[in-house]
Each structure stands twice: as C-alpha cells, then as structure tokens.
Length: 156
Image 1 (cartoon, rainbow, N blue to C red):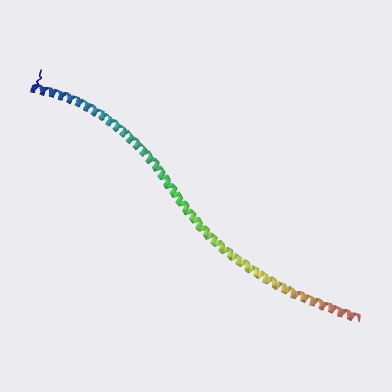
Image 2: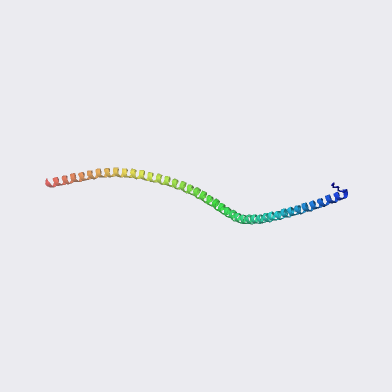
C-alpha cells in the first residue's frame, strides 16, 4: 500500500508539529526566563543587602575616622606645644647657664683678686711685724742699757 499525503494534510501536520514545537519551546523559554529572572532578582537583592552593609560599614568607618582625626589633631597640637615648651626651656636654660657661668667667672676673678690682695696685705703685715719686733728689741736693749747706767751710777 502506498501512503500518499496530500499537500494540505502535510501542511496541516507540519503546522501542528511546528505549533507543538513552538509551544514546547515557548514554555521552556518562559520557564528558563522565569528561572533566570528569579535568579537575577535574588542576585539583585543580595547586591542591595551587600550595598547597604557596605554603606553601614562606611558610615561607621567615617564616624570612627572622624573621631580619630580629631584625636590626631589634638595630639599633634599638644606635641607641637610641648616641642615649643621644650625649645623655650632649652633656650632659657642655655641663657641662664651662660649668665651663671659669667657670674662664676666674675666671682672667681674677685676671689682670686681678693686672695692676692690678702696675700700682699699679710706679707706687708709680716714685714711690719718684723720691723716692730726689731724696734722692740732695740727699745728693750736701750732700756736695759739705761737701767744699767742708772744702776752703775747709783753703785758708784
């Protein structure tokens, strides 16, 4: 037996097969599209959650950083003030030490001059004492001689 399809039957069959294939393809595509759409929605939601978390962390970081920046500025100002105070102390001390050294040198010179004058005065005093001792001896001898003359005169 021979099977003969009419052209109309063949076209109808082809159209129905095509429609079935199109329907199957459309439902597969729609299902795949819906799955991908759901996946993209989940990814988007996850990205939004991460973005919010990052914004929250960034806000916390900014707060902490602002606090640390203020503290850094305060500490820097304190360090600068302390450096200036130290430099002033160092300069004042150097100036005071210089004045003290000059005063010490002046006092040393005065003490040296005083010692030299005292040594000279003591030397002159020793010389004067020696002269007076000699004179005292001479006067004593003269007195003894005078007494001896008086006694001889009385004895004669």
